[in-house]
Picture 1 (cartoon, rainbow, N blue to C red):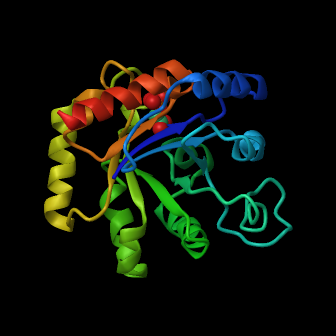
Picture 2: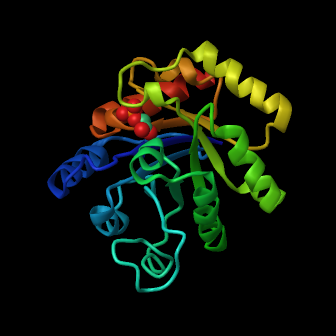
Length: 232
Ligand code: PGA
């Protein structure tokens, strides 16, 4: 299975999302069933996006609270999404770790909420957090390591235009897999563009794309280039 995930972060308003959907739905979208295209819109637009989703796209949240119940102002809890469950949810993005102080312990608590709802977390990690995150899931329940995706995102590569050298990614992911197994998907994220998307295809199971996913043409081209390269 290959995953191409768009993280729109806070960068799309309602008008821009409608324009993206219009352009997206005019494309003839053809890819194999083992390719999953996932989009995480900003929270206020999630329900509209969910109801009127782009063709062939799996809806995703950008985060979820580890709390449950109806009395948590500003939080998304299982109650909030009980009738519009996403297929995936991004957890532990470096911006949330930096801006809200989220750490692996909290990410694990959020993941537990998702697993109860049978939603797969896409857990963002970097060189400092990957092994510990993996170990925390193993200590909690090793079976759940089969029910999550990891997105390897070096902090210096996010939103900077300085994408990681694909050979370096190969080294990092290869090393991790040698120690821990290869049963869990690992995506790459950090300044992915249509021009560099294909170069990651041999070394990972997909991409997490920020800025370049906000234009339908560019996101479509990233998907196309990654898959085409993967099949050669
Ligand atoms: P970027 O963001 O593609 O804009 O670098 C990636 C991410 O933050 O997930």
